[in-house]
Length: 354
Length: 193
View (cartoon, each protein chain N blue to C red):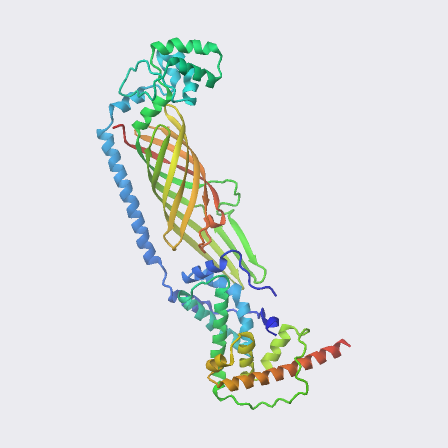
């Protein structure tokens, strides 16, 4: 008899939702008050940091336009465009990129900015260079004499100078998801229906496009590597539409996250005004509306364009993978762990060479 | 009939959303559980007219006590909801009947065979109808003992009756039910011939 009645069901009558909603909220006062306090606090932190950032930017702008900066900006980063070194550079440009450590410096026109990474026998250099370039001996012959009577600026030198040049940078950015492999991503497309075969309830969730704002500081470790951290603010918004019995309710769920990203970047291409780099890292985010934390991994390819000596514009198309966090809130992170995003912003050079 | 199933940790999600006071979660709770809770309620109450009141009180109790509920793994929300609907049903029945003064005033003819009749062919709906025809004391004790796995001591405490009364009510409930089942089986086999 127990078994027979174990799943016994009876069509439930429609209830008075006014009373039930009251019961639901009476014992749980809405968190709006607390929420607004938190939001204000978060906004204050962001303003404070951006204020400090801006102040130091101005500070550097007025006082620390160092001579090195000027000389570097006059230096040919594009190696093919500088006078009598033309031949050498056009031949060795690629070599330098491939083996930046193989540097021979014969004489430096601006000693304070050219820093030899290693000084080696020119013959050794040429052997390596030739091997790596897989060039015929003719190239080697061209290279040798010119190297002996004119300074050779290899990209590693340029890196060295440039990285000292913008040792510490700050950026402000905005990031948003872009259409990636998940075609059902955007609000209009991000709808899914989960229907319970037992009950006549259908749930539709429309996830809107998440938007993230961030501030971060990047510190260059050496010519290629840099580390970056800061603060992010992310806002997720979803429309949850539940049809249960004869009633349908639409709830807008908004979640706010403050995040702490930690990234490392590797710069793999540099020209006078343009850099390309790879960046990978992780972000820890705290949801301000619930007790949940969200961890994610992210990676991106970045392209940076130098607008002025202290201001760069950049864009980073990338991906983020969001781990399941055990939270019960239906979020775009939980429903679509892999997202593709585009981040763009400005990077300010705060600290030049010492 | 299938159990209410959850994909992943949806039940935990539902609890958290209810604890936040999310109204859409309340609708979802209703959609998932109301029919099953109504089914339990209908074992206790005989009149469908009273179902809405009991169910209303059940959900109101659940929603207003959500903050005190601690999620303890899959199915714990449903298990708690079932306990609440039983309590609300009993509370309702107490307004209708005075269990304290239950007496053995129903005569059950002593059947010669005490064998448990076969229930294989009885649909759950017919069984529920039989339960609803049992006197209120019999039905309540039988429900608590058989479906809610309560001991006679627990039933006695719940209803404010003596332990022995619970046992005798159960005995008589079983007798009466067995009689109904036999009759149902007989009628059914006649129909089939």
